[in-house]
Image (cartoon, rainbow, N blue to C red; front, top):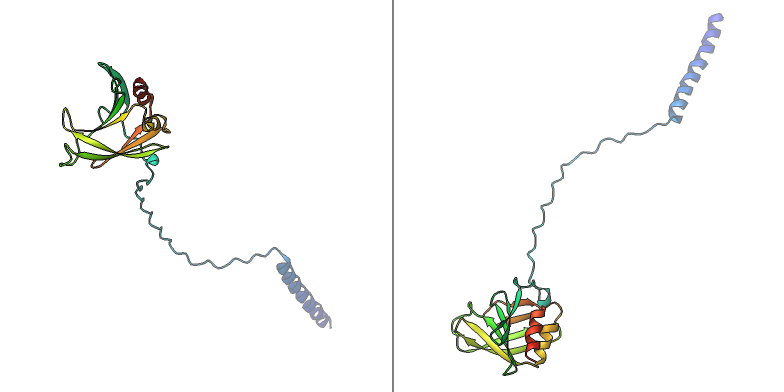
Amino acid sequence: MHMKANRRLRTPVILAAALAATLTASCSDHRVVPSPTPTTTARPFPSPRPVPARPSADWRDAPVTPGNWTWAMEGNISVARFAGNALVLQCDRNAGTVTLLREAAGLRDGAAGGQVPITVMTTSLTRGLTGAARSLPAPTIAVTLPARDGLLDAMAFSRGRFAIETAGLAPLYVPSWPEVSRVIEDCR
């Protein structure tokens, strides 16, 4: 009988131990590790091509034409020159006029000796003019204005720059420096 009693005791103890082990395992910080996801090699997107800058429709956003203004008295004439002779302002005090001379070395054939449209643009005023093509001493387009013309004041006081567009030539975006005002004031 002793063996029967031992067996009866052993079975509940084994069951209790198994139950305790199951409860302990289920109550512990058990973490489920997800199965690994298949990895794919990501292909990099091609870099976008740089878009070339579009020329601005507004002349005030265009880069200033490289060059500097100089001023000098040449005989009795007050003269301001931009970028050598790209643009010249001359005062004829006796006549009371200021002449704008636009270098025209690159002007298309056929314009020499004729009338050439020029547009002067400032921050406050835009005006179309007609220039006369000259070939001596160098190819130029000349426009003569009365010294008190409001366009000259607009050029002198334009915010930072003004523009000169001449048919057949690249536009000039010229800084509005004191040399411009000097020539105008010398004529008044």
